[in-house]
Amino acid sequence: MRRSYVTLDVFTDQLFGGNPLAVVLDAAGLSTEQMQKIAIEFGYSETTFVLPAVEADHTAHVRIFTPAGELPFAGHPNIGTAFALARQAEAQGQELPETLLFEEKAGLVPVRLERENGRVVRAELMAPEAMTRRSRMIPENAAACLGLEPADIRTDHHAPQVVSVGLPFLIVELASRDALRRAHGELAAHRRLLASNGISSVYAYTRNAGEAPLKKAATFRGACSRHWMALPKILPRGAPRLQPSRSCLRWRMERICP
Image (cartoon, rainbow, N blue to C red):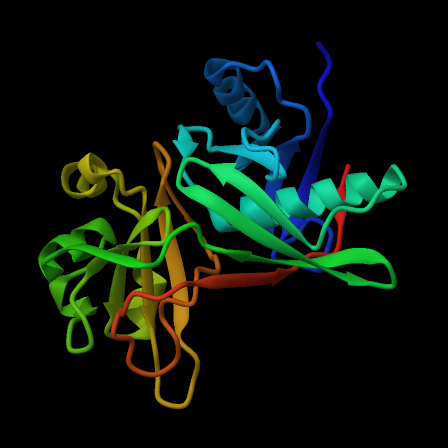
C-alpha cells in the first residue's frame, strides 16, 4: 500500500537547515514494527506517524520514532507534524482549527497554529505534562556521560538533575564554554548510568555574565552523536532553580520540503 509523507526542516527559515523531520500522513494500518523500519529507512532523528484519533474531539493520534525506538513525546516532531497537516489542509482547500490536539504516549499535546495572510507560518505547543524533577546525579557520573572531568561540572545553582515534560533529560550546567565545546556523548557511560531509567539525552549548558546561556544536547542513538537543539523554557536566563512549570515551546516554520 502506498503511503503519503512529507519531509520538513524545523527550527529554521532556510531550506535544508534546522532539524529534519519525516511525517507519514496516513499511517493507519502500519504495525509498530513497520513504523520502526520506516524510521530507520528515513534515517532522520525523528519520524512521525499520523493515525486517526481515539477521541472524536482530538485531531490525530501521533507516534514518534527515532531509528532506535519510539519516543513518548518530543518538541520538533510535534511542531513539524502540525505544520505538515495544516499545509496539507490548505492545499485541499480546507482549514484546520487554531489549536490541534495530538494524542501521544506522554499525553495530550495541544499545538496552536499561527497564520499570516491566510497561511500557517508558525506553531506553538504545550508540553503534555508539567515539569517534574526526578533523580539527581553526582558530578563524576554526569561528567562521564559527557566525556568531561568532574571539575567541568558546575553545581552551585543545581546538581545534575533529570527532569521531564514528557521526555526525560539529564540537565547539567558546565563551568565554562570551553567545557561545552569539549562535551560529547559517551555511549558506554550512558548505558551504565542512564539507559536503565529510559534517558536518551543529556542537556548541557553554560552561561557567562551578560550573555544568554549556550546549550548543547548529546543524544545517544546507538552511537554517540551531537546536535544543537531548543528545549522547553526550563532554564531561563539567570539562575535556574528547576521549579516545576507548564512549559511552552515556540519555533518558526517556513518550508515543507517534498
